Structure formats: C-alpha cells, structure tokens
Amino acid sequence: MKQLNSEKTEIYCDGSCSKKGIGGWGVVIVKEGKIVNEYSGRNKKTTNNRMELQAAIQSLKSLSKDERVVIYSDSQYVINGICKWIHIWQKRKWKTTKGMSVLNRDLWEQLYLLNKLLRPQWQWIRGHIGNIFHDRADELGRVNEPKPLESNIKISDKKLEKLAIILNEDKGYLQRFKIYTPKKYYLNRR
Image (tube, rainbow, N blue to C red; front, top):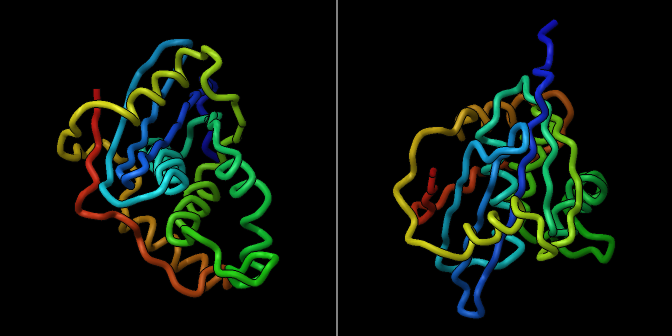
C-alpha cells in the first residue's frame, strides 16, 4: 500500500467575474508556510461560480495522488456543492430539489472525479480578511495577461475521461461526461 506524503499541502483558490462576463481564477499552493506554486487563468464569457469551480479543478489537477491536501475556498457554493449537494444531485439525475437542471454540471462532474481520486479536505475561509495566501489567490484571479498553458498538469483530461468511464461502468454515477477545456483558457505559472 502506497503511503501518503506526511507533508501537508495547502491550496487557496479564488475566482472572480466582472459584470461584462470576463472572469478569472487564481490558485496558490503552499507547503511549510511558503508559496511553492501559483496558477491563474481567464475566460471571456463566464460567471463567478464557474471561475470558483475552475480554480478548484485546476488546483487538483496539479497534484499527485499521494499528497495530503487541504483546499481553502471562500465560495460556499464550491464547499457545499462538493461536500453536500453533489450526492443529492447525482441521486436526482443532476436535478436540484426544485427539479431544475444543476448549473455548471460539466465542471461539477470534473471536480467530483478529482475529489474522488485525490480525497482532499475542503475548508471554507472567509474572503478578504487578511489571509496572505487567499488574498494572493484573489489577486491572481483578477490581474495580468495570461500566459499560454504550460504542461505542469499531472492529471490530464484524457486520464479524467478514463476515470469517468470507469466510474460510469462501476457505479452508474455519470450518464454523460464532457471535459471542459475551452481553447480560451490559459494557465499562468509563476
């Protein structure tokens, strides 16, 4: 049995969106109290919730399976969605308690698979209270021209699709699964 790395990785995620629909997300990865990596991305037509989800997805894609991870987000939509609501949505065939289709299902399915694979701990953090790491994630989601995607992603979209197929066959969780990687997404690595 493979042992988990005893060093805990902390990830701070944040997303933002302007009234014009231009959005961004930022991720700060911290080990032993120091920033070891930063990522950010942009999209021209999006929503704040999609950017919050994208931040969480991209942060998990950058990890290896043997890391102990705590993910901090100021989005109760993300925290409640992945920890509570997603199981209800799946049982209801991706319908809310009011019978409406779940918004952002494509991103929720990706986050669910990565969550199942990597098993991080999720923690809500109040935004804009002076946590330097979360404030940095917020800043990354709001500024700078994005650079082209660099291949530091350890979990590829193909691997994620294979996992979705396996889960679909084993448990019947997913009826339909599409990887959301629009061409306009970029990833900044600093």
